Image (cartoon, rainbow, N blue to C red; front, side, top):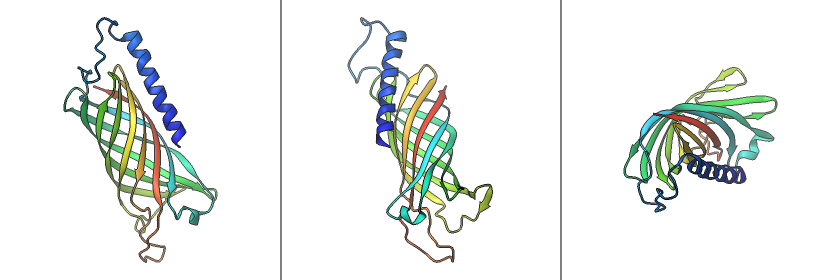
Length: 209
């Protein structure tokens, strides 16, 4: 997973450099000091994109052969400026995770709230890092809803990524590292300790106002 992330971040930086060359101020007008006035970093908007979800952990082998699930996320964000290079960005997202196993698809739908520190490294490229919490809304095996009683319904973890801003559009990539175990009970309702956690790589497009 590391190589796609690095390639995507490199693409964001390249896209930003092209945008600055084509649409930015002339060389004589540019200030190359990183901590100079770096553009707008406040507002709100909508966003959505693709989830490349899987399960990780030392007990993942108990599932046997499985593969990740390509799904989606969507929601809103707002950004509060704390200076020219730093801001805080809370979000509210509907995010679907899961796996495919034994010809069945297991899906877990969450309402998630990341709270991210945003640092602008150029006028149009920023890096994001922060915690996120969430609530499991529903679980399904194929198209059949299953009980969420054996599952941890409170989710928490870390999110990190990079984003390029092109006019009102935002193109980004992010990895969400789940820290809670997926299951808290077995099928008989007995407490268990099982190292099985979500991991999601996201690519998204946003529109800001």
